[in-house]
Image 1 (cartoon, helix red, strand yellow):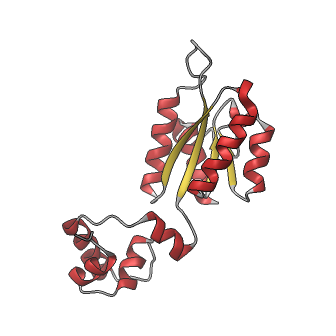
Image 2: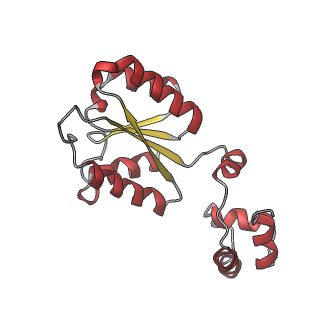
Amino acid sequence: GRGITIEDVASAAAVSRQTVSRVINRSPRVSPEAKARVEAAIAALGWVPSAAARSMAGGRSRILLAVFAAPAEGLPAAQPLGQLLLAATTACNAHGYRLIFEQLPAETEAAAGVAQLAAAIGALEPEGVILLPPLDRRRDLAALVESRYLRRETLSGTGASVVAGNPGEAAARHLMAL
């Protein structure tokens, strides 16, 4: 069978497809009553908007890519990676974004890391990239991100060390605000 579509949600909420689109894209041009009906229909049907369809319609993927280095053999990660990524994921989800993680090989394999990041950017088409330490010091990675006209953030970038006490969350919030 076919999955649930935006048309199914619109029918269940007794609104147009465009109204459903406005609700999921957080447009202010929806009455509170229509918004409540759409949200109730989405919940009742269990519909999840397609990221690919949203990207085609609005030209935005709503994806951020967090890139981190594989820890050196036998050494722990340089940052409390789990806490950083969890906070950044939570911030992204609250704003309708998805945070995807990409682990690059150790710095001794720099060319492989650039190729891997290029492939990930090409496949995912993120709106922005967060380079986690120590990758935030790699000029080759920064140049790649900038050559694709993507927003780039590091944990030490603008405002990234002060929001809510977690630099991962701050970096994600900063990218979403651009």
